Image (tube, rainbow, N blue to C red; front, side, top):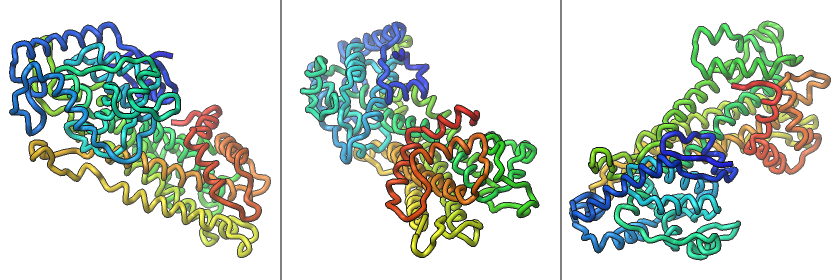
Length: 506
């Protein structure tokens, strides 16, 4: 269970393996050579006392302040301790692991001028499970994720705090207990470690992975609702979608027909009604739009995961050092805002389907899906909760990338807010998962009023997954327990994985 990184070929699936399954990581021999070659050029600049940003000068507005060779180590330490200004709750350990992996992978490209031993210390921490406490807030997403990445580096210095074997310890204690020697940074190294987009990218990467699963879950939930509503399947006919060939739309229609194969509850146009409301009839178009958006975001993510994003960049083959702006998070800020909007829409349409299930004027089912309405409220307030989550998502979906606040005395006069965009997208994902949990429960309850029905090949398996955890609602009971149980099936990808054991989903 090992991943080898070279700065160029890390995949989303590999990142998830490292972040969630504790795969070990090592650097390829070729990448080690590139790191060492880049470092030799930095040492040359320092020995010659050449004026190079971040190596023999201060940072940001202080870029015109010369730093002597004797002050290089103090400069890098001061950079880390002064920049560790994060606030808020700690990032999840899986996100921290993703950050550490991505930063090491960027350094492995050989354009950062860091010592190989420093990168190996970072990977030793990752492999032994020393996870720095990184506060979630404080990054502008340009000049990289300076504040949160500084908290990561603090632990490398024997400072800050970390989680080790489930305990929150000082950085010094965590490193000692893990048998890892704390380091002292030298010229360029502090800047090489913190001047990048790896915090926003790690958060966004795990969110994209989960959202790809969530789009399949949304198709499953929608298919169950189609059955509970005796929905018309003609709208999912491949011919309809071939004449408007958006890939996500085509894939969703294929999924719906595969999930509903063999169902006795679906209808054809004209049998019960001529056509369904948009939330049923337009599932391929709505879900498909979100799928295409996620595909776009993933394409940007694959680039960023294997990019050199610090400043200045070292080009040892040319003997050059160039000060640029690869740390600027704008490409990912826009993408992660798009991701949040795409997932918010899955929740929006899911909540409208819930409304159709609980509203007797629309559903043909008992009001609020309870046989004894009045005495029992059934799913009345479950729909309220879904509506609340959807409303919150609409606030969260406002793009972070349209904002910018100048910093560093206006030297850094446009920033991306990309880390905020990634964090928002992740929060939207969690809200959307809860909305879809409520739809799954509502649809399963609606199906229970169609006694003796045969469910589809895929929907039947989904229904069984739900009913193994949550029984049919006969009388009112504490509903949050049911919602949480169903949400757990979503977050652990249990339903999707079980259904995909029978039905191939796109």
